[in-house]
Image (cartoon, rainbow, N blue to C red):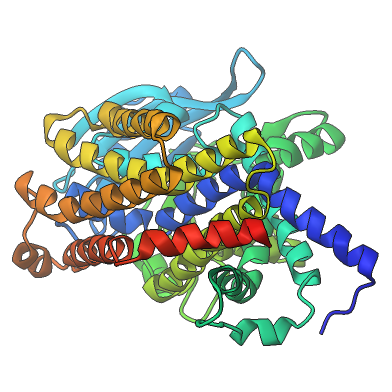
Length: 528
């Protein structure tokens, strides 16, 4: 039981309410897209119809690197990024670091995409933003992640905005904790036969109480990611390295050692990759090769946490001999509490530390957080119904964002499935989202009844989810038998999930007396 004086309780209630109202809709958008982005990798496999299960790091690639190095200008030999693209093809980015016109460090070089047989199927000069930007086969996955990370607002303002939203979520979580007089009792209090206002309030309190720890974790880690690159790095670079961000990155994330520029051919990196997979127990998510063609070449592989672990793993190998050197902390040259804390931020935020199980738990908690945000906004408006004309437009805005955003996201998925075979998904995926959003906003402004419009959006969302699986098959996506035979059970699993979600949404929306109960909640809330 949390005891606060009456004045402090009123203050906490006010802070809790206004922190949710001022930034609640943007916070809802970030949390909802983040909830979906938990399964971004699986959605990418499902939407693109990937059939390959063997990783590019499990195939020989050292000879390909030597061949590419011979045809790449030496000015780009300083750093090489290795990562998987498409259907487990290998992406190789030879690059150097330089300053752009605004004084920001960028990576510029040549990107190669290697097919299963090692042949170059794509070659592009450009910067890291161009190389790591959306491609036709991953446009949907990239769109979901970018919407969550920075709401498609240009750097650094997008990161600053999501960081502020994370802090707002932290304020709402702390104030919500303090105004719970009976915290443990509220976890289990759900009066199903009470009047509609109490039922809605109980659901809001139960969902909010159970998701409080998740809210703290999500808010803190999200703010860390947003402010780390946009504010933290420039400040530390200015204070310690005279503003040299590249020197900071080398000191904090690089491999310290004595430079040895003697020209030597890279060693058996295929053996190094196999050893890294065996040591870490997982395929690398990323790898870097520093000082290509020199005696001080170093290969670093980055892996997800081991079974039962929480922090990711980084392994360093000699680039000439291919021998294992040491395990590298994410931050700094030696293990430290700060480095460990920074390393666990990503697994805690994205919920990928225990595979699909932790992702499913994070998805459920994220859904609960969305429910808490949306019901909190609606309860706040219900208590003030009729007090101001401006609140009428706020209610319409809550309906547009709360129920229209899922419809727009589903429309983006529909647009991707239709246009990916045509090679135009990078354009039409965000365009489909924007078109659907414009229709929703226009409907929200012109529809006579917000309640009827809300019901229409729920029906539209349910129907959109039901169309995803048939549309994927219609656009020549792999069938269930093919997907299972090639080791991609995630494809039929997501088909089933979308169909069940669509059926549930339609059933929930079209229940008899559903609209009447919703109206009762608002009217009773106003009377209260």
